[in-house]
Image (cartoon, rainbow, N blue to C red; front, side, top):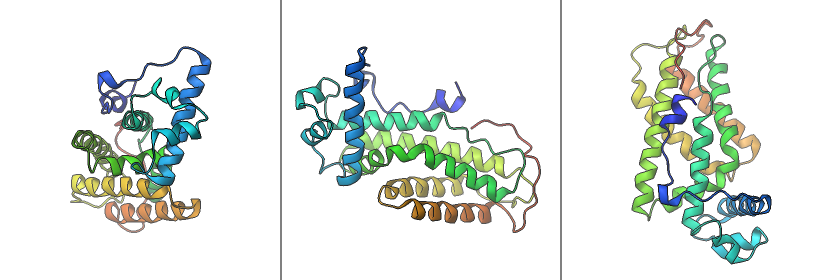
Length: 226
């Protein structure tokens, strides 16, 4: 297990962790509920999605929903915890060699590729935290963790030849982490081309913030895992 996986925030409290069904049929029903919720959250948001609609989209009775999740809120937290788990397993160590711009683009594209399945969940999460103080607290813990990972990535990138000196990495990381999550929330309504263009624009922004134009390629002087 990587350090990021060990240190990731657990969005589900101990009493909220769903029991994993043993029977294949029950696991399939639970998977259908999660998939239905992801689609509906992406289409309608959190408040405009009901338990009844999730069950109906999953072709289950409402009682079937409550066999797996206590509420719509519980299901949303479970989905977001899955997203965090996937993110914690993503290797974000910059490549040892290569053009810095290409290195940055690969890292961002890989992160968004891992997140895309959960776009609906994050759109609903951003909406839910506005009126739920407990979720807002968990939200802050999540952003603190992701910002720390961005800081580690930017610090490693600064060891590449051509990096600018005197960059306020923590401040830049906080700003970019906020932007990444905002883009993730909007991506559910974006075409693949629009998302690709957005990733390209973010790549250019980070590159110019961290490197002088025409930065040379060369080895990274760190093996830090993030």
